[in-house]
Amino acid sequence: MDSVERPTWAPGDIDLSRPSIARVYDYWLGGAHNFAVDRAVGDKVLADVPVLKSVILNHRAFLRRAVRFMLGQGIRQFLDLGSGIPTVGNVHEIAQAADPTARVVYVDMDPVAVAHSRAILTGNELVGVLQTDVRDARQVLQSPEVQGLLDFDRPIGVLMVALLHFVPDSEDPNGMVADYRDALPPGSHLAISHAGYEEGEWNPAWDDAKTTYNRGVSEMRYRKKREVEDLFDGFGLVEPGVARLPLWHPESPDDVDEGAAHFLGFGGVGRRP
Image (cartoon, rainbow, N blue to C red; front, side, top):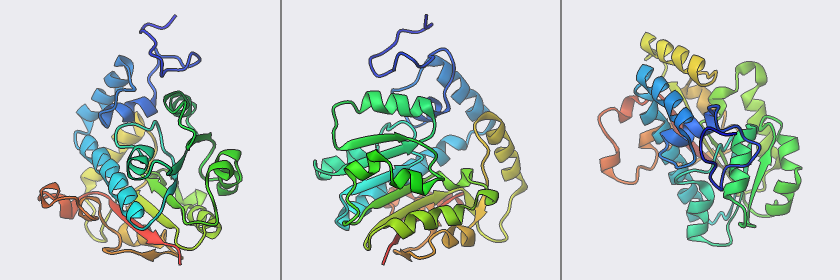
């Protein structure tokens, strides 16, 4: 028996007594789909790396701005890769507020994230959830969920937010992006956010933060700005190009603080010609 009362959004085959990275992220983002065991893990990691919450919130804010930008370009269908649990400020919430007919497919390999997502999204026929490895573009793109919801004769918005820094060089992240790019129709957009730094500004303290994060959450890799730019090969970068996350289309000058110019991460959006 579970040690906590099971809410309606929590599937019966999910062990609520064990922490889930997907639910820890939900907690960090201010969502409601988490439990005391997840919050305990989240608080422990934040005690060791206090800046982490700000980093995660900035990636999420970039996702929201990127989706709104794409909506402004006329895009009404989205593929969110490495989506986690669709928590506060999720893609379908933003897209369907602008256009109730907007379609979204969430893709994640974490069975806990997928199970919760399916339970949360029950009844929304314009949103699909696919459990598979996002590194296999062919499997993702040929899935019934993607083929049934997305029209490849019309532009698609692809989101790789806080995803590719979990893909090591040995697994060819550039090739993975290219596999998706080659399947997209003209006018499609790609949004990427990625942990990273400018050439020549490396701070040894960042290694300590990464080590703590790797131990408590998941293995990740920083990349330099030029490496993030290379991920957009075959796309035309929209202004201002690859920029520090808080500086990419900020919603208000108040959102840009003194640390924005040195934020440990970049974001950008490219258009498929």
